[in-house]
Image (cartoon, rainbow, N blue to C red; front, side, top):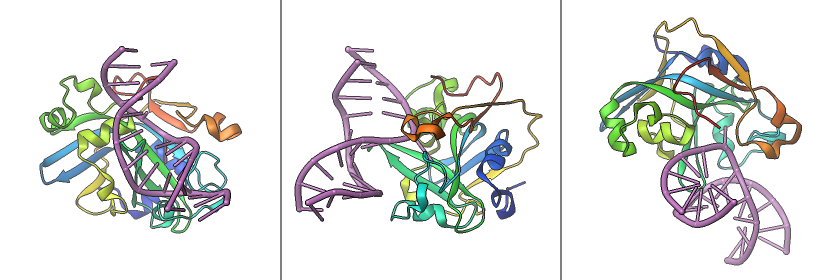
Length: 194
DNA sequence: TGTCCGATTGGT
DNA sequence: CCAATCGGACAG
């Protein structure tokens, strides 16, 4: 069953935990790909120094974060990688959940071709890797994830044993770098390293 | 308009 | 450890 607006209309920490074990699906022109979400991070918005919307910052890029819950916030990092987030919380509250890793399910051959590697374990390991495997680029920024192109389903996976720890790559966020807002499925082989 | 730099990745 | 690669953010 596809996740609807109300699922996303909650704080990012709650959504980040509950997204573990759900299925991310992309119906692209090249074909359908999907994977179980095994790792997420919560970005809590205007009070979170690691968030793009910290302090209520509202620019061309971050305007997506202020949209409806369930909107895809996709941006380019290092000029190379697209990172996928789902906007959460009530409209106007700029929180989001970063999808960091997937366990591939459907379209694995297409993912291998897009990534140029064969190791299934590495196909969607890391936020920049999974978007490449799934064919998700910044063109999809702002798309409604309650639609039929890019969306998330509850497939009854679980129960899930959640590990909670600090987020990756946010050292600049001072005290907020220590907040335990990264979540992943304990023991899962597809979680990113470091 | 000019400069700085990143919620990363892959290779040295 | 370090380069890749480019649009966003912000100073001037």
